[in-house]
Image (cartoon, rainbow, N blue to C red; front, side, top):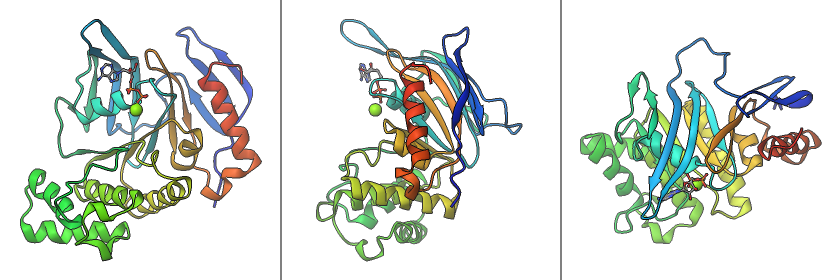
Amino acid sequence: MSHGLTLAFQARTDFVDNGSLAAVADGVEVSPKLPSWPTVEPLLAVKNVHLEYATDKSIVRATYDVSFNVYGADRFILLGPSGCGKSSLLKSVAGFLPPRAGSIELDGQVVRKAGPDRVVVFQEFDQLAPWKTVKQNVMFALQASRTLGKKEASERAEHYLHKVGLSRFFNAYPHTLSGGMKQRVAIARAMAMEPKILLMDEPFAALDALTRRKMQEELLALWEDTKFTLMFVTHSIEEALVLGNRILLLSPHPGRVKAEINSHQFSLDSAGSREFQATAQRIHHLLFNEQA
Ligand code: ADP
Ligand code: MG
């Protein structure tokens, strides 16, 4: 498999006027702001988004002036350390957190509230209703928000559970499943909704390392099979590199765009390679403001 990302940052890195780090390198485009390459309309356009939380004592600014575009078959990664506003951005795209300023458009429509065209898979294993079987969990979501008939919901639930390798577990209850299997159900349920964009917030972060890797493989296989649009949040540089074709680097307090990387995924097998490690190191430097 090709290791498309030749992140040779040796060419030049410097700070531009707005304080973002810009880098020009062979084989990779890193831009401080909106990318210039695609001529097609983005599926998701996040423009100058400021996000805030009002607490008893103060206003917490979660992101400052964040802009990015997500296109059709992107596996778009939001990468940055804890507190850089990744989850807040995802919530905002999902429609749970209205921007204080700026705009979010999906397919040309301003996002104002949650909707079945944007489905989120979270990190937690308790996203499933414990009193429903695996299949009932998937069907319930479909019937509630897609208003599908029982037969159609049943067929679609089986189809997607099959895709995540859970054909033998339709009638199992969540408490009998491992963490990885629960996340597979959550992924099947989200995919069964056939959203315009699938949003994932550190879905594998609570899994053990081996299961996590397996889940990454499976997610890529699902993507190869279906080519859905994915927006994936992680604080792991390695995970970003194996899953993403485009990676937005964010810095914290408040979250700002540091750089955007147009990359091709490394294969999972290449994760230990020297090239992979060097790339991860470069990204670490970019994230933490050091000269690469
Ligand atoms: P990340 O997912 O990158 O770790 P978050 O989006 O969770 O970052 O948080 C971004 C900032 O917003 C942090 O400073 C965090 O403390 C703050 N924040 C997040 N959720 C809330 C909340 N419900 N109330 C107040 N502040 C919050
Ligand atoms: Mg988070």
